[in-house]
Amino acid sequence: VQLQASGGGLVQPGDSLRLSCAISGPPLRGGNMGWFRQVPGKEHDFVAGLRWNGGYTYYTDSVKGRFTISRDNTKTTLYLQMNSLKPEDTAVYYCAAAPRGILSTLGTAPAYDYWGQGTLVTVSS
Image (cartoon, rainbow, N blue to C red; front, side, top):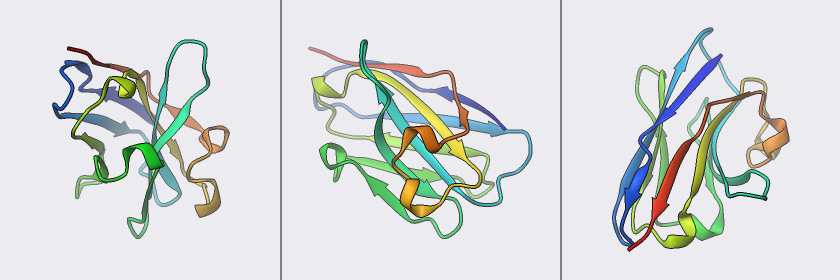
């Protein structure tokens, strides 16, 4: 499985941005997909997760009501719609896949097997 994240950029507080993660290689048939973010000196923090079958979603508290994780109908792209962005959302954002992941590990970075290269989101006035 190969993942390619894109869509980051410099935006002002309150703006919106949509990140995309192109998925290639063997088709995913289950498990979890997630978005994580990382700032210098810190580990990957969970942002949002999606159960590949069934579409269950889960968010970290700080982004609930502002971010939405989704996938397209062809199941080849994962999205993260980010609204009402805040300076504290500034980070490198990574998409990740865990083809055999279970629900209880949806928000756990070490449980993910494949990672994209990251895309930088900067929220600043």
